[in-house]
Length: 628
Image (cartoon, rainbow, N blue to C red):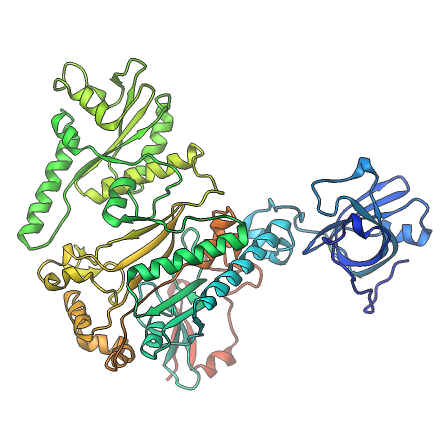
């Protein structure tokens, strides 16, 4: 029989629970029609819920009413079904399904709700375009792939809470409406109805509040914090995201690092059954840039870059020599001003066994380097006879090159017959490193060296505390102004800011930054020195951070913390490359939700209550004004 009623048969088991041991039981299943096949007088219905799929059979000797009910079912009808569990015939056992040894012989079917024509098929993983998936996200979330990723996210969040609570941490919520403070990105602002002309900001992070919690003696704090940043559309950014926010009192850097190592080990063990090393590799920031061209290196493969400047200087390659000369001049000019400045560099990358790369493939690699401002990329190949040939080889081998330079290059790079050598030069060392580092990253993907099931963690430490702003001719903090400079640099903060290393640390995995943190400044006098170096006016500091500086007058403890990104962590654990894949309701790349069409316009009454009006200017451009 078939019906459409509010009084429905409530499930006694789920669609993923039945096994051979359940044969003979009468069960009620609730779920969606995932697939349906008719073979003569027999109907096979795959019924799906969050827990799995069960095959339901309407036999050829079933009552006509039941057969008719089965014939009317369509994809994604939500139904209740009663029947008897029975073993499948040996020839029909499906070893790929957890429920594949049994089926349910249907006795009654109830349609709970019907489904219109689907915009795309719900399957293991949807192949619909992203915009369509986001518009019908409730359908996309029914797919096995999305259900599995949302399950993983839940389990990761639970494991984080489990681990930190076990270490004596309190989970404490901080405000969602805060005062606007400068933290890099633009704030999302919320107008106040009670105080016309004034605004709350949504937090870019709970940074200041978690430091105040340390002043409050809370000692060990964490929160799965919602954060908001009004950034221009780019790549995989989301206007709202979640971070695992952690702060601890009376700690030094290694205490924070060891805590996070333990937490990651617990999370991966509990959710993926993967054992991580007890301690992660630690790489100084300068070494990461020199070896990999980035402070978030992918360590699933080698191909470390080498400094090629000394060998380039011996060659007749004028473009390389000019880059080194110009870099040296820039460095000397900066030094005369009392500013520590990097010189030029030539970096080289050995690609084993890829001397067969075509000119087109090399040009594609060069294009990746140019994204990072490289003027070009030189190359050479090692022939079967062990000689340099092609591209820039004439400057390092043959009659025009200095005697012995070819052998020196091959020995220095450890090159073998069939290898490819890639080189980038620039008067700014960071440009040469970053450009060739981008080529290394592309090669890792192109050559299949980035196994998504392999997880390589590392800590990047000893970051520069300050960076020179050439446009404004001043020092800026490389991260934020509340980071503790390493103690050995305290005496020379003002005299040589460029040499100062901060007590900063980033956790990276598989080419992504997973977390950033630091030991914080707890000495008000030291904080004033940092403000002074970056030219941050004391009155402005009081205006922006007065509530924090006021709190720091009352015995703040030494403290530090870190904030792993939950979305990115789950993304990498799931083997995905987009955080949209592990967020239930993400925005698209333009910060718009196709499903609920936010952001949207609001009515005049709401605007009036907030003392706001929309003004249309030339060309239809709209601006917001505060009503007097």
